[in-house]
Image 1 (cartoon, rainbow, N blue to C red):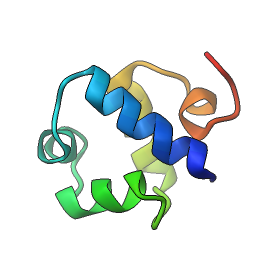
Image 2: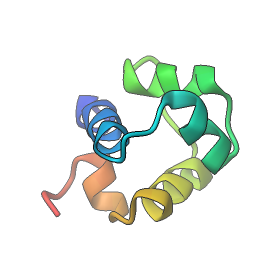
Image 3: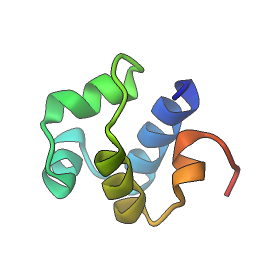
Length: 69
């Protein structure tokens, strides 16, 4: 994982106009973990990545910073 993930996560969350607390509730994690991910201090589990990709309707490759789509 790299900083692309942290940047993309924050961008997607802001585009959807939701806060960290709401996103955390939607995917079943704590608000603190969202903050850690967005600041590049922790990496999500595969199940969390999948939940994020489904929630934002993007590919895992996009979310991980591998692709531009």
